[in-house]
Length: 380
Image (cartoon, rainbow, N blue to C red; front, side, top):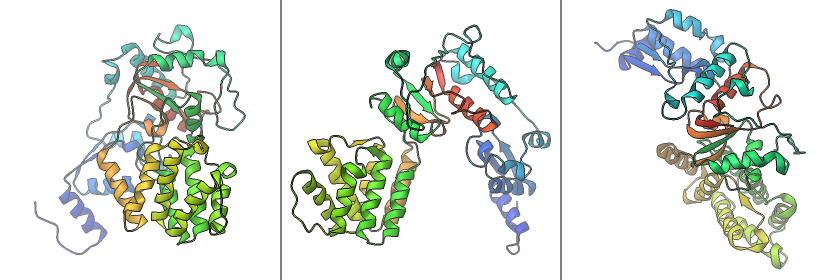
């Protein structure tokens, strides 16, 4: 094949892309953006062979209307294809519970066609357990049950060595961490929203100690519990504003020590030093025993920012290392459904599974199917 010649017109760029990439494989194409779909279509039109793997029932990321805007309609794609094949064998459950696999595929078909998932005893396998309980939490997206109501859930969790506890919202996932008495960790996935927020806030502070202190307090609120403004943050920030001018004793003196670290280095290095010292206090000091971490990996990533010349260099390198390492969730983990997509486990609990969490719309149907299909052997 001869390399296309000419300038940089769109036609030439498409020809060059097709020449360089004669075969294009698009995996998880249901999550494609409008621009991504335009690119692969343009390359295909100039001669590249295109292979698309996708399941519209697993479209849970991004703008659900983006594909329709560019004609990325599944029926249109199938009619334009040279060949189409369905992957309809429940391979995930061949080494687990085939009955659960068949039930999950039946649920998928019903959800796809606008129907419901039948949870009546006579219509589900023994591997699917249903618990009806009233959420007594007063705070939005929190989760709390009475002792009798949670008995079956606790028993299920303790019986399973491989388990994902799946929910829709981040705030509920954090609440479930407390619900299970903090013995089940959060799966933080590949994204680090709190870390990225901290980096942005530190860069915007531009050496302003007060703004850096506020960024630390906000970050701690995102990755753990206990370091609240009323218990710690207000005093910490006041000491920064006042330049640690007054001698303190006890707990205020320890917070003053944290503030001094930031005043000595009003940048990402000072922030990292504060976080490292705070972790030591939470581990060893009685005044800080209420400070607990939920997102351990994200917190320790933040402490490493101080090892780099600039905070942007630190974020880029930490992100690169994490993507290269491709971390896996622990055997037992709490996760939002989005972060658990594509993962498998022996058992899964989907909670809460009610109309307010999973309302009647196409996005929720896909989200429910992704959650149901996670378990190989048992589902609650």
